[in-house]
Image 1 (tube, rainbow, N blue to C red):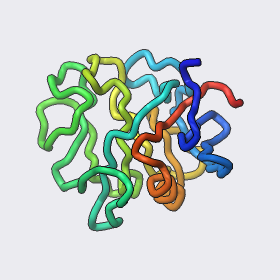
Image 2 (image 1 turned 60 degrees about the vertical axis):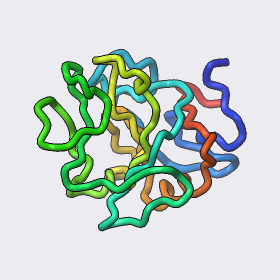
Image 3 (image 1 turned 180 degrees about the vertical axis):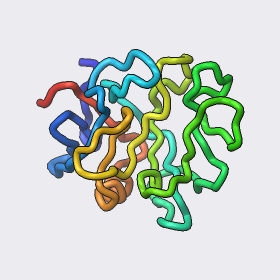
Image 4 (image 1 turned 30 degrees about the horizontal axis):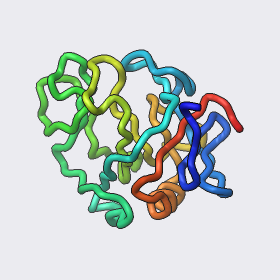
Length: 173
C-alpha cells in the first residue's frame, strides 16, 4: 500500500495526527487531504513525506536538537512562483519572483519542518512549501501544510527519528 506507515512515523488524517499511541490535534489544507494537482489548490498531499530540514526563529525558539536544520534570517523566503527557476526552494528576499516570507510577525513559522513534497526535482506548478508548522488556531485550515500546537510540534520533532516520515492519509485506519 503506497501510504503504509512504519512504527515511528507521524500519521496525519483529517481527524488529527498520531505518533505511536499519542494523538495530536492538527490542521490541514483548506482543500482537504488528497491528490495535490497544482500550486494554490490548498490540498495537503497524500503520501509518505520525509522531513528534509527544520528551520527555526532563533530570536523566538531554540534550535530543535533532534533534526538537521538552520536558523531563519530576516531575508529568508520560499519560492512559490512556478515561473521561478528556484521554484519550491528557499530564496533570499527581495526576490524577483513570487515567494512567501519565512520570517513572519505571527508565530506560525517560528519552527518549520520542510517536507520533501515536490522537491527533487521540483515540478513547476505542482505545489510548493508543504511544511509542518505551528498552527494559527485549532483546526484553522492551512494553504496545504500540516499545522499543530507549538508544544506538540516541539514534542514531535524531539521524538521523530531522522528516518521517520510524515504519512498523510485521506482515510483513517
